[in-house]
Amino acid sequence: MSVGKQLHQTLASLRGAKADMEAYALSTEDKNAQKLFTDCCNQLENVIKSFEGRVNYVEQQEPQYKVKQEMQKQNNQQQNNQQ
Image (cartoon, rainbow, N blue to C red; front, top):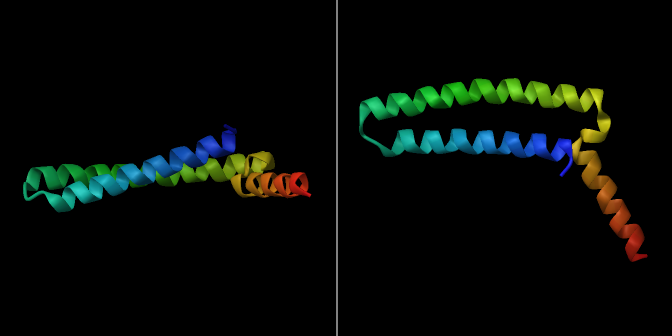
């Protein structure tokens, strides 16, 4: 797996963890647990923003790590192989 894919996979995992925390906060009636899950959501949001900045920086410095470009390149190769 390329670095670009790993970065985007990690970003997706972080977003998934945040969504889980939001769901947990909504599904409990325990005020202490709600606060804990909400605090975790806020912390994860800060981590996500920082990580997105890092991903953008890496993609600017190393264009080959851009996932979108990599996927287009793979699609072009597959189309060429089919012809």
